[in-house]
Amino acid sequence: TGVTYTAGSTTWTYTGTIAAGPPVTFTVVARDATGNQSAPDTIQVQATGTNPNISFFNLSDQTSGSTSASDSTTVNVSITAGDDVGVVRYLLREDNPATPTVAEMNAGSASAPATFTLSSSGSHTVYAWVMDGDNQLNTSAATWTINVDTDAPVVSQTVRIIAANQIEIYYSEAVTGATTMIRKSTGEYFSIG
Image (cartoon, rainbow, N blue to C red; front, side, top):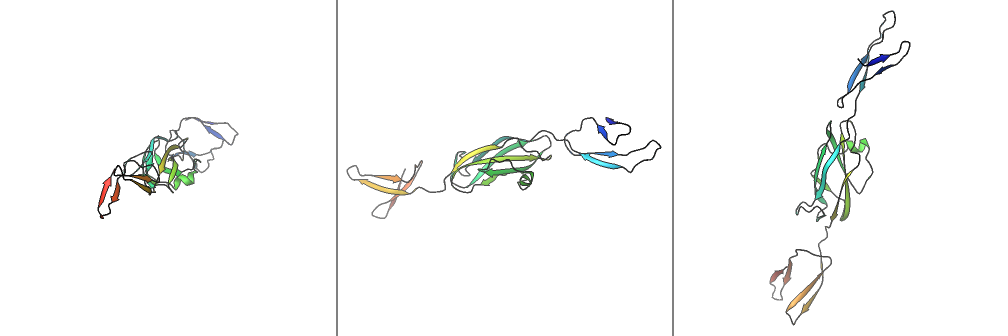
C-alpha cells in the first residue's frame, strides 16, 4: 500500500510513514503487460528521528567535588543524554567547539565517560557531543568550563614582627583553608591556619 506507479515509467513512489529506528526493507518486483517478472530487488530505507540531546553535563574535582576548580587535570564527568533510538557514542573535546564528524564520534566512547583528562593547568572549556543510532548528533554542544590549578603555592617571603611575637607569611597566590607548617629554631614544627 502507498505505492504509486505510472504506466510506462521506470520509477515508482512510496508514500507513507516509516517509523524511526531500524532500516525498513522494500522488495521490488516488476511485471510487464504479458506477465514477465523481474528478479526481486531490495532497497533499505532508514527514517531518522529526533536529534539526541544532553539534558545535564558538568565536570568536577575528584576530591573536593568543586565544579569550578580542580587541583588535578583528571576530573569527574556527569552527563545525561537521551534519544528516541538510543545514544551510541559520547565525545568530549577540550577547547574545541567545532562539530565533530561521524568518524570522530565513532572514535568516542560507547558509554557515558566517568572521567576526562585535561591537557594542562588553566581555564578549559569542554564540549560534550552525543550521537544516536541514526548517526545524528546533538544540535549544539553542551559545555562546561573549569579552572585547573596543579601548582602548589609557594612561600615567597616571611617577615617576623618581634613586638607582637607574630610572623606574616606571603604566598605566591591566594590561599584558602591553608595549613602552614612552621619550624621553630628548636627543630619542632607547629601548624597555623
